[in-house]
Length: 293
Image (cartoon, rainbow, N blue to C red; front, side):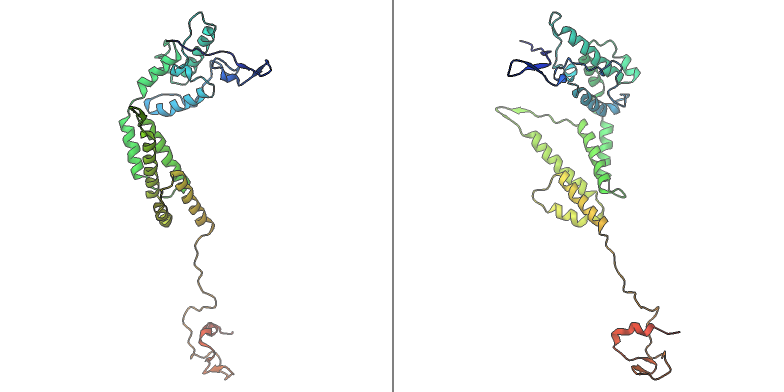
């Protein structure tokens, strides 16, 4: 088996025969002047298994932007000692190992100090912490089943759901198998099922004020994605905020009690007045509440 090692050249030939400088990080052996041994890649160090999934995600992102994932997943193997990139690989491997040790607690780091490669350190952490956390999975599922919008606005409620969904996905892995001559579409089917379940859960937890919008969404065929459903409900929330429903009471000229047209407010017999009361159209009874001083 032939092992393909990385070409350490950081430039490519141009059409005119000259060499042009490309992205320096295209060369995984490249280390910027800011890439030093004391660098801490993540803000929160790994201290326990409960933090591992979020810590692993943050570490992979930080290493990926520097094109260094190959040193922890084994895709950049160690070249022979007489290879021209042997020294570069050794330098980068030690740098990756240092970055990982800087990102874990002192107690965890001491147990990994003598592991020779960054890949070995990463695999050790994976085997130690990446395991099914049944109590945490139970807590997430319980929270997802009971969460309601309540006093939260739609955005805060949706964000809380997404956070729980993404954390839950880290604990549950979907294994896609090859069936003979074709690839099973299990991943796509699973994603579609997950999307439908998320839409249902999101709508179930909304306050009753969104019942008309909820009925409308459930009648759509096919059911929209969770992102589209969120935007529809968010627009409904904005409309309710901009145009609040108010009821205007006809209180103009209304007295505290019914007008008695026979009580007589004038003692003089004037035109339009009968027995001291107003003898005009009865729909103008508001005038009967007027008593001059």
